[in-house]
Image (cartoon, rainbow, N blue to C red; front, side, top):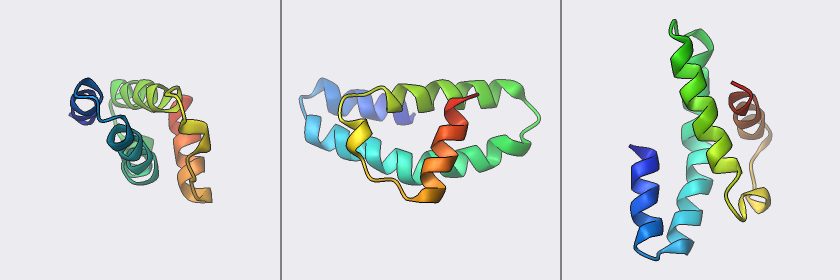
Length: 81
């Protein structure tokens, strides 16, 4: 659902809003989902989250987004799944 919402923003030419949403997902959503994934019984959950995190991190401008220590750690860890 998050990827689809991001696609709507990008597809409608709202690149600044899409970039802001990517930052929000990296700071707020991915860390919470990574916490769930740590103990989730289905490995597919972790793999899907890992692919999503890698996709977000590969987007232009993402390297410049400020992430605090805990969010950066969670996102980096999720990207390894």
